[in-house]
Length: 453
Ligand code: GLY
Image (cartoon, helix red, strand yellow):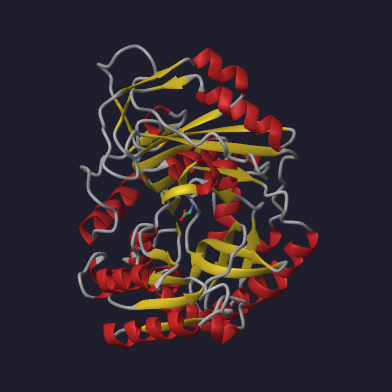
């Protein structure tokens, strides 16, 4: 039970965690939000404070033990895990074993993200609509399958369709390659399976059929446990923009900006998602008896007016969260506590009308090698006029720095601005005006976030 003096611990350091902490801090139930390790933005957020992890990784069991000691000492009522790696490493199981309330699936359910092979067999077992795929643990077998595909696939005049090559394990966004020809496909398979490009994550791969179509992210909150009825409350839809450059060109990134909601995710498509993806997922989570109290992320592709599930993530998306949470018109802390406590059926979250556009500002060179340590200048009055919120990511506090935001760049994706508008166009206009209030040496961003939606 929560008393109205809720103390929340958010684990992670990105823009997603800043957005979560910002939203938690608005709750009347919340006394203080701790972010471990947090970033330069969360350090200054009202009612928030960073917890120093000495720069170490929450996927490390020693750090997880330190976090448990911290949560006990500080009387934390609810811990919320942002990224996937600590979840795959069992952080939620450890917290629960220590008698602490935590929002995040146990390691068993976290395989839905940590193993693409496991996720695909789960989808097949429970009838979740997804592209066909085969799994390989031997390079020779995978190369043989490539030769067969590129020799025979597709209509003669078009040539064989591309193949999607997916590393089984967590690869920080680098584990999926769309190969249009056998040379690229062979090079990728060899790099993943033989040359250890992704370490253990690439030792097993999937070869998946390729569908062309727009992608949509549906985030949500899950409450399931052995012997209990499983529930998922989906949030408003969102769209990430993964390629580095305008018009969806250039290399893949961790996300260059998001919008919410997605205007083409209409009633019919939404119903198709609910029937063909959400309902069988829920049935599967229940049948497997997972202790899954946490977030879920459905990575959808729309093809031929039908939803296909490309992937599950067992966390909220980044930068989707920065676009979705500003639209939430209900208490996020209450919603999360209900998911953790098994009372999600009583929650009816409300959403603000309108839309949010949230472009990401990155350091020059990203997603390749980039510079860090540049002072971030901020015109707070100009930002305030747009009504946008700034969520920091790869940015640290720099008290001795020049006048401005007091922040310096410390990562590739530096910050997100999230602007609300009565429609997508207004949100977009405000978001780009907000970005105009920020500057740092080499600052770069896409100019077309939400332009085609
Ligand atoms: N925006 C994609 C992700 O969070 O993985």
